[in-house]
Image (cartoon, rainbow, N blue to C red; front, side, top):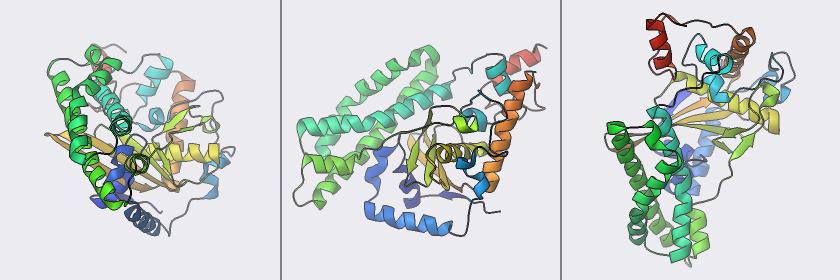
Length: 345
């Protein structure tokens, strides 16, 4: 079995951040030359591994990959995020029609993703309207935009409806820390880019500072997955990235297999590598962790087995019951706990 799980730190960590749709803002942290070198090293690392043809997504019509139920489509995260070992979350959402509760962690994910995905547009707008400037001047301008920028995101997502008191204050503070982190880095990178160019122009500088990347929307219906799967990143035809803003969980790796299979089925392009990116603000500091995987036969088979089990739960339509131990990080934990203690279903 060819299977790797590596936690890269420092330079390698930043490399994978560069290609995320939501985290393109970090592109300024590494040069194109360093990117090329790291890509070569990454391919060498997995050069001895291969994926069986029957487990490529474009072979979706074979008995192994084809979905067991017609006209039923699940999200990749819905399948992969195995909070409940009994799949009761699938039953509650898909059979009992009980939507997943909105938690503080859910809202934090909304806010962080919005901050990171919208920040590049803010930077571009300031540079195009003010022209080339020193990094220090950009820092001052962007810092003055912080409160209004964050307020608009909080208002758009209705944060006050879901998060209260100290949790609200904490989320607000952490959002400011993340914004400041991005401002400091992009300002320093601006000075570096201008220093490297003999005749810097706004268009050239902005292109290097905040390059445009297209979000990939993939049709997963060939595999019984959602019609519009929004892949956080799809780069160089062989790399997929999923961004997480919560705690590290072992089952997160299955999202990579799901996205890889869906991309192969829809676009018929092989995807062999994947990385889970974790973004967090802890104790006043931005923390970033990258878990890298070769998306091998084992990982693909395990995802398909989980998918088939989820389909079975929905098709049978019976409550699978509570597991012997419910993890407190399950999205339905509070819902099930109240009913379990009260003797209700």
